[in-house]
Image (tube, rainbow, N blue to C red; front, side, top):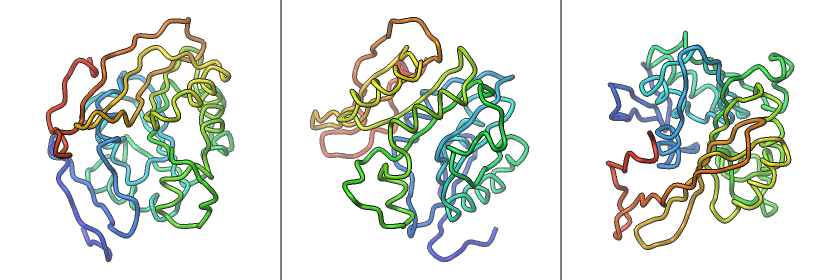
Length: 240
């Protein structure tokens, strides 16, 4: 496969899967790997990813779960093209389809309440007025997809009883859970991550549309050693 300027191929260290990253765009972080390990899919399920980026989470799902189809929504043309390239690289064209559109327009192509599962590593940094139309800013800051819009559209996409998996900034967890509840998405499992210095960084959660009250809160997951290096082998209790 021919690589474009700024692109490199990396080994995902998972059943031979590889990923092309472009240093000029947004490159995935450990957030995506942790979320991919947390998600659970079933063989007959039709799923949607909101903001697929390079496609790394959906691609990892192909090795970790059986599923019918994933429709991977990506707003940005550059990232959508890169995701398609990665799907082709891993021979997953029959399992993952990239939809280059704002996910808020999903019902132009799909019926409401038609997905069994939705998952996302969305932009969760506050926009703070940073509205520059750059690939990196749109991937990181929430001016195109706020927590309110994210939860609203996920609820519209999901069947009753369908599941939503998210990773978000821990500092914004109250805002996120408020918007989930407002849209009939009940949190059922959740945990926080912290780095090796004791700083709580992320919240990961599973929510069920129309689910009953009651959440299982798992212990914090330490993702980095005290020197900041990423711990390659994470505990499995979060992912069972």
